[in-house]
Structure formats: structure tokens, C-alpha cells
Length: 188
Ligand SMILES: [Mg+2]
Image (cartoon, rainbow, N blue to C red; front, top):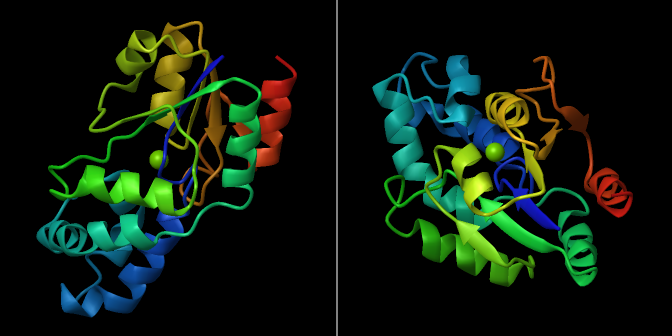
């Protein structure tokens, strides 16, 4: 099977790292709380004011280099790959956010021994990419992407639970850990 996987907040703890960094360093970008009062938008990439734009420009490369991995992500991905499944990472990370985006991401995957068959960057229409790649199972933390792909394709879609999506309704099945996903894939 071909598994389509988002990176941020699925493989990595990006949201948690962004929130911690924003809480510590917001004073460098603004005097009021223009960043921490809009954390959901910040994590979703909706940069609705200048301090948020400056914060992301200054921090995103460091985030991609140093972000923590989710528990069991690498171990589970390795097991899935060893069973012959293909791992296609589909991310909206792009060089418009930082010129070294692809280099940093490939180096991060190498450093942490994250197995992959392909990483596709700068994707804003994940449905089209999933169809082009003939993805069988798709995992993302974005409710919008999950609902959209689930409603208009035959792809099996899963929402990875996160701090910012935990209270949002989603038509896709919500999963909370990598071992849970492994069980689902093994049962197919
Ligand atoms: Mg994500």
C-alpha cells in the first residue's frame, strides 16, 4: 500500500515547539500578545499580522532542524516500511517559507533515520497529490484536509489528534498514537 503522511504534527511535535518558542520569545516581535493570542492560526500557517510573519520567518528553519519527534513515530514507520508499504510524505513546507526547506528536511530525516520513499514539498492541494500518487491511506492533523480528501476520494483518511484539532469535529477517524496507526495498517 502507499501511505500518504503529513510531517508537522504527525511525525513531529511542531505545534508544541511553536507554542513554547512563541511564549518564550514573543517580546522580540511585539509588545502585546499578537502572536500568542493567535496560536491556532500560527500553527495552521494563517499568518494574520506582521509579528506572526516575522516570527515564522525568523524561527521556521530552527523549528525544522530541532523539532521533537512524536513518540514511536520512527519505530512504527520503520516497521510499516519493512512490510513493503511505501511512505510518501506530503507537506506544505516550502522554500517560500525558508530557502533551505528541502535541505533541512532531508537532513532531519537522515539524522533521525526516518524511512521514506518520497517527500513532496509545497503541497497546498493535498487531495490532488494523493490522487496523483495513488495513495491508499492518508494521515494528517488538518481537519480541513482530512474532510476534503475523505469526502471526495476513496482514500482511507485518518486525523492525527493534536492540541489544536482536539476539539474540532472531523469525519475522519481520529488516531492518538503511531502504534494505533500501525494496527490499522496491519489490519488492512
Ligand atoms: Mg501538519
